[in-house]
Amino acid sequence: MREASREPGLTMGLMRISTGVAMAALVAGSAIAQTAPTTGGAPAAGTLDPAAEQAPTTAAAAAPEFRLADGIVATVNDQIITGFDLRQRMLTVIAMSQVQPTEENIPAIQQQALQALIEERLQAQEIAKYETLIVTDEEVDQEITGMAQDAGVTPDQYMGFLAQGGIRPEQMRQQLRTEIGWRQLVGGRFNTRARVSRAQVEQALRQLSEAASRPQYLIGEIYIEASRVGGQQAAINGAEQLVAQMVQGAPFQAVARQFSAAPSAARGGDAGWIVQGTVQPALQTALDTLQVGQLSRPIAVEGGVYIIYMRDKRSGAATSLVTLRQAMIELPETAGEAEVAAATARLTALRPQLTCDNLLQRTSSEAGLLGSDLGESDVANLAPQFQQVARSAEVGTVSSPVRTPLGLHLVAVCGRRVGGAEIPSYREVEGRLQNQNLAMLARRYIRDLRADALIEVK
Image (spheres, rainbow, N blue to C red):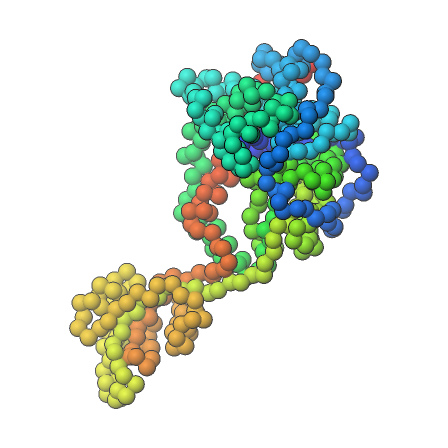
C-alpha cells in the first residue's frame, strides 16, 4: 500500500550520524513510572556531568541481542530492507546515543531505525538518478575522520568502538555514503533558493541587538515531534525515558543527535544563547527555573515535547554603540568670542553640504578644517559634549557646532546599534538563516519522496 504523507524532521543527510532524527525516541506504552509535567512548569530531572557532553572514547558494551525475523521486513519502491539491515541500524542508534536498550524501549528503537532506513532507501534512489553524483571512498574516509575527531579518538579507534557494539564497517560506510550524497544533492538543488537577503539579515541582527540587554540562557534542546510517535502522550512518555537515560549517564549531545527532531540535532542539540522572552511561555518557565547543569523534565508544547539542558546563564549587558565622524576647527579654551563666532559661522555654512560619505573628503580640501573618522564607540565613553548628539541625533545627520576644550566640531552620526555580549556577526546570522531555509527545503523534499513512494512494511 502507499504510505500516507508525513512531515519528517531535518533529513539525516544534512548531518553526521543523524539516523532517524525525524523520529522521536519512544512510542505509547513504553512510559516509565513518572508523572508527566504540565506546561505550567518543568522541575529539574537532575544534574548532568558536563564532561558527558562529549562523545565516548571508551569501548562499546557488547552488542545487545534482538530477536528479529530473518528475511524482508519492508520494501521501498521494490527495494528491500532485511532483518539484518534493521538490526544493524538499531545497533547504530544505541551505540551513537548510548541509550541503554530495555524491554520497554527496544520496540521504539526498532521503529525509529526502520523509519530511518526507509528514508535512506528513498534518498539513495533519488541520488541514483544523477549519474554525476558519485561519493568516493575518500569522502567517506573524511567523514569518518571528522566523526572520530569529534569523539577525540583516531578513525581506527572509532570504527573499533562501533565494531565492539556489533556494527559492521561496511554497513556504516554505506550509511555515510548515502548521507554525503544526500547532503550534496540537497545543497546543489536548493542552495540558491535558501539564500537570504541583506534586509533579512539586518532585521535579524537588529532584533538580536535590541534583545542583548535581557537575561540570556545557553541551552541544549531535544525536541520530540508528537505526530511522529503516535500523539502527545506518547511523546511525553518517550521523553521521560530519554531523561532517565541521560540522568543515568547517556551523553546529552549523543542523545540529541539520534533522537531530536529539531535542526539543532546536527550540533548535538546546541541551541546557542536564547534571549528571555523569545520562546514559548512553557519553555520560558523552564529557563527561569533551571540552574546551570540541570536537565529539565519533559516540557509539553503544542505539537511535541522539549527537553532542555541548561548549560549556562548570564545577565543582559547591552551597550549603546554609535559610529561617528567629525569636522573640526581647532580653538583653544582661551579663544576670544570673535574667534568662536567666526568658526561657528563657517561650520554652520558648511554643515548642509556634509554627509557621512563626503565629510572626510570635504574636510581634507578645506584649509583650517580637520576631519576624522571616530569609528564605533560606546556612547558612555564619549566626551560629555558628544553624548547628547550620539544618543538623540538621527543616523545620517550632521550636528550643529559643538564646543569642546579642543575646538569646535560638527559631529556626523553614521551608525547606531545596541551591542551586547557575543552578538553574532553578520556572516554568522546569514549562515544561520540560510541553514534554516535549507533544512526546511530538505524536509519538503523527503516528504514529497515519501508521498510518491510505494512503501510496504511486512
